Image (cartoon, rainbow, N blue to C red; front, top):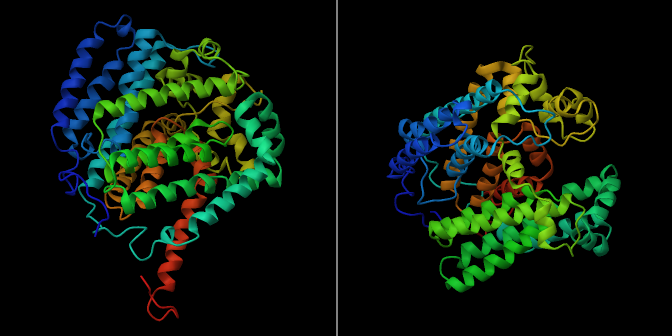
Length: 493
């Protein structure tokens, strides 16, 4: 039996996303197309209309893919949001405000940008077809999940404490003590040097693997509270408990070299669990929260990179922020993929999987070193900077698939991603505990980052950030084995 109560429509397998949201998507899509005709310069990029047509059209053709506002945060809705940014928001932003150069040595030709938009549109169509196919052929699991009642290690005494201890060791290895941790937050320019010195040491490696346990301990605490009292307590208590533990989660996950994604992903997963298992919030409130969060993320990004300190005023941070450039760089605007296409002569020489394998192994310590020179990460950054050693730009998954297998690779890769997204959606829906729901949503946030990001980034997250989740899964299997009849232990569940 499930430990939560979904909205009536969402609780029925096969009916998620088949309501009036499809009509709203079509109306919004075609209204956007009409509005786009008035955007100056839009005719320089006619492929913009590919996205404006494809997005609502796939909602109509693939019912299982439709956005479902009754469950605002879910793996499916997250994927649709990322594609909406790529297919609608970024092309319109580029046409209206002009393409931002970012770190590119030059802007690609309009032809390359149009080819990029078309390729992204094709990836969206492939994703939706893969999702629709899997959603109509995968039967419900009947509530069987990672954390079934009676075999959930997260409910055991000492489990959270053990995670806090492991995380504290990781923080000690990374910062050397409380003083180093305080400096990390108050003086990032100075702290970066200390972090870089530790990066290649055994202590630095231990810190990287162990720090996620600290933030995950607060995730477990909040999820256990949500299962016990989340729905029954007063609204003020819900907000207070969630705000306190969410702040601790942010602190726990924000110690990874100022990486915003490190703490944004668990926050999105927490929000998804809150909205489905604790309390639903009006869409307007969610939009305001998202806008405030985005503003803070931009400020945090400027703070970490502008030699700022804790005493820096808002004016100096704002002056150092190019909002249009940040918006297009982090949103994966089409000119960046267009540059890759043009520099590679539209994949004139295919890599046949070489860069994909190298990118997947790129983050591995020691083993990955021999693969890095042939990875998509190095290839793309050398196109931008030359052989300078700078590796700070992210090659898109669409682009890397294209370099390896051309258009066929993009189609096949995103069909598979759609199949996987459908499985993640079903697992999220059928989660038997709040922690299990968090794990599936957290996994979805990073897996579906392939829509905007790169294979190397997702691989890095799986290698370094998922150890608390791996431990949870192993603990669950071990606990189930020990409680099995004839194992030598009685089942006290």
